Amino acid sequence: MLLIDRRYIRYFDWLSFLIIIILSGIGLLFVFSATYKVEQPVSLFFKKQLFGLGSGLCIYLLFCLIDFKTLMRWGYFIYFAVIGILFFTIIKGSMGMGAQRWLDIGIIKVQPSELAKLFFPTYAAYYFFTEKDTLNFTPSQFTPVLITLAISCILILKQPDLGTALLILFSGLLMIWLAGIDRKFLLLGLLFVVSTAPITWHLLKSYQKQRVLVFFGYGDSKKERYQIEQSQIAIGTGGWRGSGFLQGTQNKLQFLPESRTDFIFSVIAEETGFLGVLTVILLFSILFIRLFIVIISIRSPFIQLLATGVISHIIFAMIINVCMVIGLLPIVGIPLPLISYGLSNLWVTFASLGLFNSIAIRRFYFGE
Image (cartoon, rainbow, N blue to C red; front, side, top):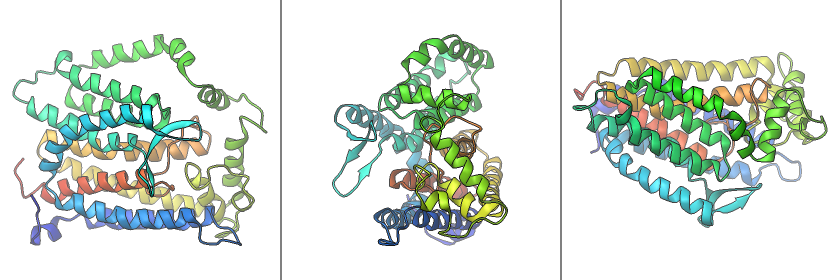
């Protein structure tokens, strides 16, 4: 069902939309900087990101127009297809940088694990909504959601993609906790994770183990520690005002690996300084506060659950990425939402925010 009348304009969340446009514009600007070369100023990555931004806005508006109840109902069934695609990716996926995370659809490669961020919240929220008459918050009633969450994370870990798996795990557990599962169950789960940590450690890939060890201070500065140390140098040399757009030495001399993706925050810090990164963090903070205000204004607890789920992966990703590039967390390969290069991540972020705005538009009109 499409809602196209005065209510659409009246209840459209213009503040969050404006911040989204500003942040994605900043991302486009610094993807240009991170990929700029004198012989080829406008890179293919910049062109793809520009296309991703334009198409992402169309996705955002489309998700705003469609009734969130329709999206939640269809998303429940779509998520089973997503799990099937994740299986297929492990078998026939396209290889890149030592991982099998992508499906090649000709012009571009897409990352199916990104779809899990969008559709797991619709699956979980619809499940709890359909079980609301019998839901008495016993662990057995949460079993289907927990099993689906576990299967999703395992399939994504097999690609391997630890960062995306963690985002889906954290978002899923947050939804399950908000849905009312017994705290004792979560504590037992945490105890199980801690007690099986030695086994989990041996299941990690060698590069994942190295990242954890680097976080605790181990590794050679010319090998394992190179990436994080170059990131910290870039951030530190930015000072208050930065070295200027296109003037960052760590960026331009290509000392900083993955500067257009996971470490684009370091590029922003080097070229705009403390004032620049403070602006970015403030914009994200205002956006998240605005989204939280919308959530607490929703009357239905199940729609609140859906709204929380579709934006939680964005909040977790922003916090983890910033902490990762400054050395407060291990490097896990999580891009900065709306800013890092990557079409799949950008599209899913726009879709999630569009679905959230669909809820914001209809939260007063519909008596959920």
